[in-house]
Image (cartoon, rainbow, N blue to C red; front, side, top):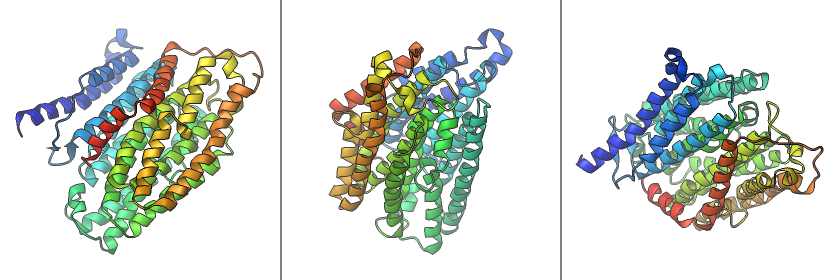
Length: 470
């Protein structure tokens, strides 16, 4: 290893190590130093901003760490920057509206950091064993975070998420066991060269795909999403919707690439089509804003899977899609956080007249809804356009027709939110005091969905460079 890759590897790994130290500082420092109690959020945000400030552009080389368990590439650098940026936004929201009792702050930030570290390891995993360990490191803290308020909806959400997540983990580990009985090396690169799988290996691949489909929330593995998003603190719902999906998508893409044809490709086809149809149809009946965003998240998982069929160009679209979708999702949940009064968040009808009482907040929410719907010139339109056009160019026109029709259906429930804000009078004179940090996140995310749409080329160029390393 020459000096440049070695220096980059040291720099890249120092980021997660700093977050690990910050996690234990948030958890333990207030126990020993009274003056630090209540400062865990500031410690957490400072650590993430330092990591983001010292991120470096990766050299055009694959750096193998820990005997191939982690692979540092331009792709991992791109996605780590994305994950840490999402973490910074979630911490900022948490500072504005603490998600739990004051004495739970240390545990909250510790769990949030550990989940992010699990996501970073999942993104850079070089083999299925590492991917499974990273998946558990990501999932276990999220089960606790979903119920950290210890309220009835939160505990119910955590219980459902834990039970279904454990089932998904069981499928994953069983599939890995079957694959390990056939292949001595479960590195993704080795699996790519292994040739056509026999029946036992095919069963293992299907089980692993099902396990990661749980994390990505593809139908019919989506059952935990609406209740988990609704019952969890809104900041955690934003984190689950924006960042966690990325880890599952990356592993599913690695598995998808192993099969040029055959039944596994057909499984992905049906996962994408059924997810797009079912999620959008179920979203039509929702009256709660958080549940609507939950079904929206499921639908976008289907659109991301459609992009797989576009090959390498499709995966470029996926890497552009992930941050674009994350900005709209975090922004929408930030608006929910600004308006919520109960534990389950506001109903859509609670937004009635918001354009009169908080016009700029309503304008930002409309931008997020239109971006998620795919209305030009917002970034969501270009994300869908790149994803669907890549699949069409590869000959999967029928699947894209299904996705486009369902995207048109989604306009109804996204417009329902906008109509409530702009065309319905407020039920009563209501004030929505939003902390400055929440407003800052809303402003940044709204600017992001507009600028990355009008000026899509820089982000698309980064996504194209990163996609070549998967």
